[in-house]
Length: 197
Image 1 (spheres, rainbow, N blue to C red):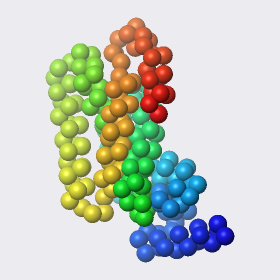
Image 2: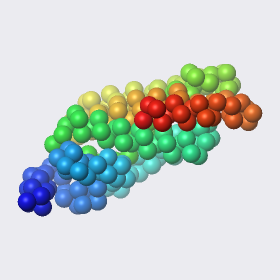
Image 3: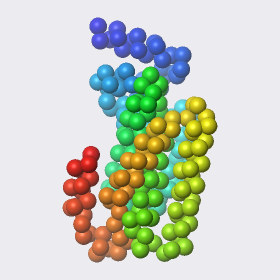
């Protein structure tokens, strides 16, 4: 009986997305809430073509290198995955019957973490670099959200969910650039992150 329901659900979305996306782990509310929660993660690695993945990877390459240097490797992975899952969840809540895929929620989370860092640890970054970082990040986020609202095919719920999650995680994980100061408060940040998630 369960297989029959699943077949019916997959057949029901054939008009709006290729079934191949679902086979590779795209997010689709009825399947995700029906026990396939792993789709909240896998959908962030599934893309609708070369252009889609190139745009997301270009944005990630642009902001990810700096984010990884500021937060460290482990925190970068936490920020990326947490933002991706929150973006997927927000997308599912907003449009339960839509098929969603792509890394943009996670990428928005990385931009959110960078913005959080510029406010939480503004004394750690030279003022000229700080202003440049704030301006470029704000322009990207604002333009992308505006473009998303102007075009119906773009999943702004995932963008906003990822942005909020990345900003929150960025505030928790931000630490000064000095080596000694980065060690202090490490356990507190981990405990706070676990408590929130």
